[in-house]
Amino acid sequence: MTPVAPLPLNDGRTIPQLGYGVFKVDAAKAADVTGQALTAGYRHVDTAKIYGNEEGVGEAVRASGLPREQVYVTTKLWNDAHAHDDAVAALEGSLERLGLEYVDLYLVHWAVPSQGQYLEAWKTLIELRDRGLATSIGVSNYPAEQLREIIEATGEAPAVHQIELHPYFQQRALRELHSEHGIVTEAWGPLGQGKSDLLENDAITSIATARGVSPAQVVLAWHIAHGIVALPKSVTPSRIVENLEAAEIELTAEEVAAIDALDRPDGRGGADPATFGQS
Ligand code: NAD
Image 1 (tube, rainbow, N blue to C red):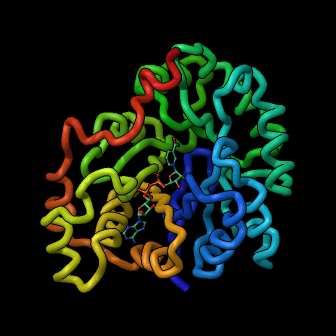
Image 2 (cartoon, protein in one colour; image 1 turned 135 degrees about the vertical axis):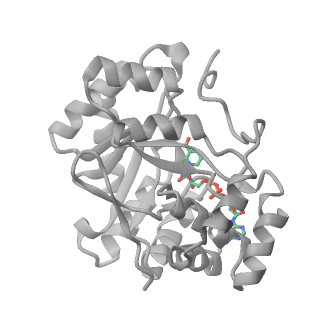
C-alpha cells in the first residue's frame, strides 16, 4: 500500500496529503469507487453536500472495515439560501447522509462575497468544531480579502483553504498568505479538470517519459513537492491506483522549477471566487 504522508495542521491535527475527490461522481457509483479508492490505499475522501454523493461515500467508509479514525473525511457547507445562516443544520444533514458521527474537515464551500454571510458561516464552523461535529474546519474559494477578514474578526485562521490550483494556475499570492497563517493549501482541480492541455504540456510529458511515469503522476508529485494537499478525481480503476502511487515520486528541484514556470495569469479554469454566486 502506498504511504500517504500526513501534513500537520495549525490546530494540532494532521491531514493525508493525497485525497480522493468525488466531484461529479454519480450517487449510484460513489460507494463502489470510494470503496476502490480505500482498498487502493487512499485514507482521505473529499465530498460536499452539493455533490449529492455523501451517502455513497459514507457507505464505503463504513463498509471498508477500516477504523473510523484512519479515514479522513471532508464535506462542505453549500451556499444555497440560508445555508450559510444555518451551518449547524447543514452539517447535521451531511452527517446523517454520511452515516458518520463527525467529519474530519468541514469547509465553507464558497465565500460568495455578494451574499455577505462568509463571516457568519466561519463563526458557526468554529462552534461546530468546538462541539466535536467536525474535528478540523476550513474554507474553500475565499478571495484573499475575505480570508483576511475572517481571520481578523475571529482570531482563528482556517486549518485548510481549498482552492483551484494546478501548474497553469499556481495561486502564489494566496499560498503566501496561507503560509503567514499556517493554513494548509488544498488543490481542487489538481490535474486541471481536463479543461486544458496541461497533461500534454512538454515540460510535464518530458519529465513523465524520463521517469517512466504518467503526466498526471508528475503533476500530483509537483503538488506534493510544494506541500499542497491534492484531491485527484477519477472513476477509472487503473487511474485511481496510478494517482495514489504519485505519492512515491520525489521530483528534483529542477523538475519542480520546470513546472513552476508553467504558471499563467489566465490559467483559471473554474469560477472566480470573487464573483461566484452573484445574481
Ligand atoms: P481533477 O483535476 O482531479 O480532474 C479530474 C479529471 O482528470 C478526471 O475526470 C479525468 O478526466 C482526469 N484524470 C484523473 N486521473 C487521471 C490520470 N491518471 N490520467 C489522466 N487523466 C486523469 O478535477 P476535479 O475532480 O474537478 O477536482 C478534484 C476534486 O477537488 C473534486 O473531485 C472535488 O473533491 C474537489 N473540488 C472542489 C471544488 C471546490 O469548489 N471546493 C471544485 C472542484 C473540485
